[in-house]
Length: 118
Image (cartoon, rainbow, N blue to C red; front, top):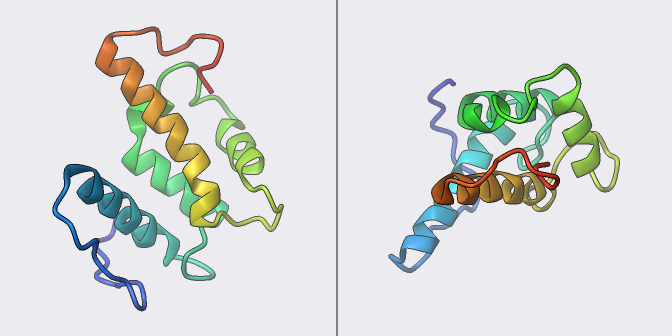
């Protein structure tokens, strides 16, 4: 990934120093790094989305047959609730919940490819 130093216009840091707030700020910053690559700022194109997941969530994609042809396209389409062919941050949080669930399963040594894996 390129080391872009673009900042989101009007972006502000969380006021606190809590672990959760730091983690959320990291997620927001990461989203902004990828959402400024093409098209509108604060929206992920299919290309942005694919690059983000391949670079930032490779272990998620390498399990449960998620690296199969068409998986990312299907996930993007399911997540693009308003069907505008771009993902807002709110829409991206749907994918983020899948990543968080996968991380939670890993932390417990649980089966990552159960019936609700996607």
